[in-house]
Image (tube, rainbow, N blue to C red; front, top):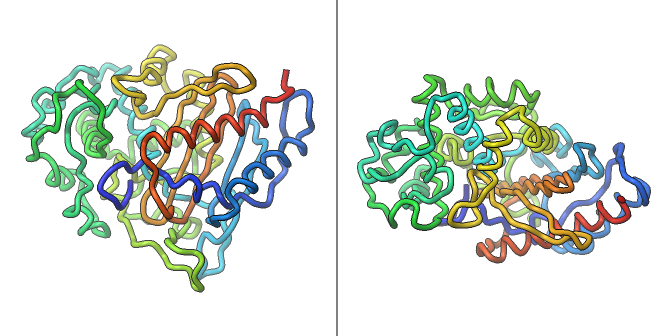
Length: 378
């Protein structure tokens, strides 16, 4: 989620990646260079590129699920003098969409819904969306306008029931014919959250806990609208950490983000999520392949898809980002080499990137990290 009109996935990556300092040693595998040499190269690359714009948070790089590089920095709560650490919980904003998409596909595999079902069959309140299907929502191809508007942002700190979010967009006309093109709209994933609730009879958060977080032992991940989860281990979001004291970001109630961006997690928990998507612990390979296949754009089902050349070979990237007041997140999966990068920040970015700029940043980041990790690996 983001406090601008559109594009909540846009992350000020030059800011987000700026402050990765202080490596922690972990077991690593691979031939050629030593673990310490790989760690040193990762640190040097990130420090040299991004040390000019400090931020607070944490970072993790792994291969085959084994952590190669991990660090935490800055304060999770400056007022209480609590530093960020491996167990600090961050709001991951639009990275939450990866969970919402996979949860919807779970229901598809269980025969509880079809991807070609009409959304109005589950959410009849959607008066302007007669031709919109579940598949259109997953791929951001519905034409439903984004509910993040000035009206919604006036209530940014207020608790919302899911049905209340509908009031921000159900009466607005579609901006294009469903399936004809792509437009990033948080409304799509609000509707998916409601479909999950109405099909299962459970709240969105309870469904995720029972079907994803608990089975995958993601103990420090949760969707919790009252925002009471991990009260003593959750990061505070900041706007400007150059000031003394740093300015805290405006409070963004997670119920407003809902299934489009309301989840809390840690870097280690997101690595568990990444690893579960290589096997069939979450979904069958057939369904995963469909999720990781682009529609009319580079967006699949809850994931952005791209390719990058690393060590002379073409590698598929599966990734998503998130951003909003006080927080940014990045999860990049180099799936052919099984290299994972997680970045979580409790500082607001200075500027937003266009789609093309964001894709270039992610590709450059993946290429650079991939070259360091995969060089001489055999």
